[in-house]
Length: 290
Image (cartoon, rainbow, N blue to C red; front, side, top):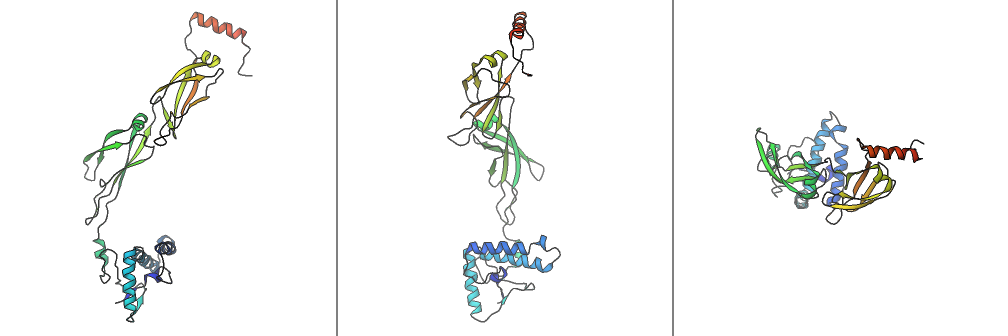
């Protein structure tokens, strides 16, 4: 029986190596003979096939032990190891546990192959992501038909996180398992709240006199309402932070609610309001342009 020397193919001097050492040797050999670095080199193409074959056998402890036993028994009888590119047959013991079984390319093609994963994305509102929900989605299959899935979105799911539905991807081949359906969650902001990291941003609208004199006011959070103190002289663009009223970081901790101040001037004034503003303009020495 002529056998390929898998250790020599991976540039290893001995069979007394760990699986981690085999992985390192495989990466180095695969990089050296990668097709992108050896365009048009038929020898490199054959070499990379041998490298992959050697790694598949030696990287699995059980198949490595059987290969080593077979190797020792054959060379105890004076047989020759072979690493050349023209050898058409090799011992390939990884799947059926029989070191004397020779696999042709055709037989390897018949091995079970897992189906490909399918990836898609859905939009959910910030409220739905915060509280969690069950959502129905429809995916178009290869035959053009729509298939509906029920997706349970846990509360506090993160933006960009993927939900995996096992076995709902493309069908496997030769009895292989189906792939999975991966659903990426995209959290949408609304006109009240915006998500930035774990912090939730909202607007705090103030009248000119509230901003000038300071006040206490209620701010609506995503799950509550809270009374906050606004210091006098606060300006548009400044922020107030309310700790632990943002989005979920984990089960016990949340980000902040960040209230961005916007001072709003009334568009329409009563006669009394106009007189007060006119009086203020005469007695005030404040000039923001200086």
